[in-house]
Image (cartoon, rainbow, N blue to C red; front, side, top):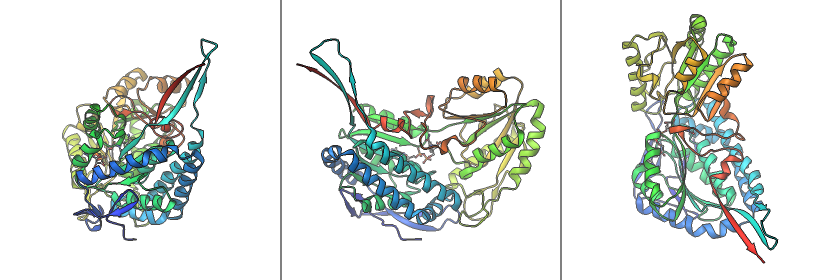
Length: 477
Ligand code: NAD
């Protein structure tokens, strides 16, 4: 593994902080690197740099911004395997998944390199012959981007690339568990040639201290956050005093509904793809599997058997499907959810325990006979555990699927076109997988949630809106 820089990137310079903090491989508990530990003063320096760089960057032509983004994309792809190795070592996901994530991350940069050239305004017909109405789309200003550990590369580029494309300057604060991937991405952005102050990187083990600066300083005009609903609500409140624009990509509790007419083998593979990818640590991963009572037994047998074949292990080992959870706290939560379900009457089809004596591994688990009283039915588990519930009617399962404060992703499998239409319209979720367990792979599609799963959308042409203000000009002559 290449040695990452344990410095902050502010105003085009790599600068040290007084302290550093260690980064842990969750598969072994070993230290794999360290990162600079920024405090509020260093966060303020980053805000200052981004603010000073904004006037020139916002006036930089779109083709020039596009070219720099395109060069960044090329550099990420040239270093894909190296970044993926870093990612697996600090976060744990299997190396092939990490490579997939780096390509996915790079593709956001490519998309926004292209989209930068298509930020159009409008001319609107006026009511009077001697007036003209023009609508401009202008960059919102300095952006603070706060990202989670579960996708250490993709969450960075899904925010930073559209912000830069729009003409905004950025302060990036990655998760304290996974700053190494972010540092490498920023090193490559620097190599691509973005001017000083356009991208700034602040790593820290004190997110509340740095986060307070980023959400309250009036020079920051936009906060874009991906993470837990709890922290998202806090940042929303903190950003209120200065009426910052805010995008929130928060937690989820996805239902996965298998109707009696579904292709059961496809549905089994669907649950595996949706639930066990990233060891169940994705915001859109299945949390509740609802199976029609007439096929429940067959489905449970098939799923239990398929899941028992999934191999848990170090992400750099070949043939591993499931890496470790991120830390001891995450492991304890998954264990708690499983114990609670078993005490309340669930039965174990496969898995159910920690694995190994090093690292934070949990077996791929399927729980049968789950009920609404169990913690797993309402709380985000963030681990490789699929609870199976049964249902009788379409109306009933729709109501149960929607009965949650979350509204990020929902899945259903059926071959009835009428039912497809009713379900896709009736589910209160921002992302629907209709016979598709992997809707999030499309960078061109809008990603985001209803209700307490968030605000605004990322990805595709929709992802630019969050970084643009609309200005109306009335010209009289
Ligand atoms: P988290 O909320 O603990 O942390 C996310 C980020 O917020 C990190 O960078 C962290 O350092 C920072 N943070 C924490 N406290 C802060 C504070 N007081 N001020 C400023 N920043 C602060 O979430 P996590 O555990 O890293 O990520 C898992 C959560 O993220 C899950 O709930 C998951 O569903 C959600 N998630 C959502 C999406 C989405 O697009 N909707 C994508 C990935 C993850």
